[in-house]
Length: 318
Ligand code: CP
Image (spheres, protein in one colour):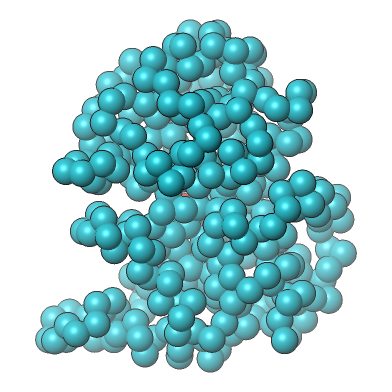
């Protein structure tokens, strides 16, 4: 593997899941692969799970790790070409990227959608520049339109808990006070359909996702109908994708909060969320704390998804 930004980079999904479960059963078996190799993790946005799990995965593989929080302690970076740099950003990404590449062997990048330009967000302007100019393998630690390490961890978690070959997976929009990117739901939709599961997506009118990600899923605007018979309920908020409301919050209707009453409509479903989660907006306390909640094992599997990706990148380094 050279770069990892979407499900297209993982190859055969059953093979990837088998490899992930083998890593999980013996996570230090490949410690030699990372010897004298350095991972640089670059964060344009905050993180708890991605930061810790990816660092742990790299340490499991014997790598050295450096972490740069671009907005804390580094020069503020200009990202647009052609700008007269007379403002508060003294360094351009086009110098910073190859400099960063010169200090490491592998680069992880977190850079969320900015909601300034849908075209820029959906062309993945930031991570694409790292791929083009760093000279290093680059993997996404959540980019503008996808969060593939999260989706791979989600898939591993479903594989570990499913009791039928093709479980019914329901991804439900749930309310949140602030505008969130579409990266997690886009990515979850494309990974779950690629894995061949039945995916139903439910959300209020106006929250339709980019159809390039949801092809193969069923869209159901009635949340109760969608939840009927579900084996897994994946809750997530996202802001509007469709123009002219791109990046806007159209609803904070708490009738969409995942509660015990909502979960009672399912086939005793497991509850999933990528975290961080706003309790009693997205999900009620009793559901997230209940016996069918998978949020902690799901987060723990972030170490495994990161390790699988780093292992494959290390194995293909020249
Ligand atoms: N799920 C996830 O990516 O968590 P962080 O934002 O804390 O990394």
